[in-house]
Image 1 (cartoon, helix red, strand yellow):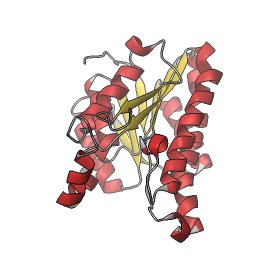
Image 2 (image 1 turned 90 degrees about the vertical axis):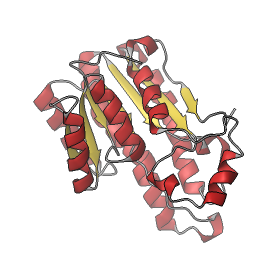
Image 3 (image 1 turned 180 degrees about the vertical axis):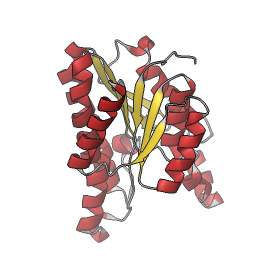
Image 4 (image 1 turned 30 degrees about the horizontal axis):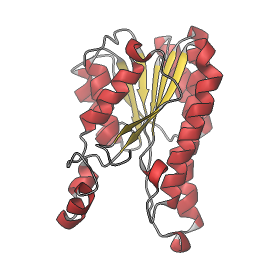
Amino acid sequence: MNVDLSGQVAIVTGGSRGIGRGIAKVLARNGATCIVTGRNEQRLKEVETTLQAFEPSCRAAVLHVENLEEVEAFAKGIYGDLGRIDILVNNAGITDDQLLLRMKEEQWDRVIETNLKGVFNCTKAVARYMLKKKYGRIVNISSVIALMGNPGQANYAASKAGMIGFTKAVARELARKQITANAIAPGYIQTDMTEKMEERAKEGILSLIPQGRLGSVEDVANAVLFLVSDAASYITGHVLNVSGGLYI
């Protein structure tokens, strides 16, 4: 899918590897000035170099999405430098798995703060600048786990389900200003983390997926590209499953 995003500014959180990195590459390849955030400075430098091969104005920055003050200062700086923020992809997220009765309070808090509070912080900070332009595309990367649950992931499932509810509320609030807000719920995607899984575990997962394969990072990135394009201008408050039929 080819989309002309020339002149648009996109922020992708959690973009130093995996799905976030893939999303940033697709947006930059289609002309967007992509600002990637994460916590690992070395990986951010690497992805910045990669993105600048597509669009020289791309950059990367360390950002702790759970810190509202830091996020607001970051968004203000981007708007001040570039004069606009057109696209926000809330992808930053972590897991800290444990069965409910063994889960510690700090495990719950840490996942909720990054995955859900981080989405609130980034959306709140960026939406004010989208409202100035009366245009924006917000895409929140949730998970099929939000829709179907998974043992040992009560904190992760809650954070991703909360993200879907948040998306729908924000979509209603911002719709009249030509700002759309949608969520994507990826299934099992082939990343560095899934590469480390034991073969038996992979086979068990594949048996649950009607298409019989893990998704690719590009599968998710192309869904994001569609939702930020003009072709999706009348779509808001939607949850797009990218799971190969895992959740139907």
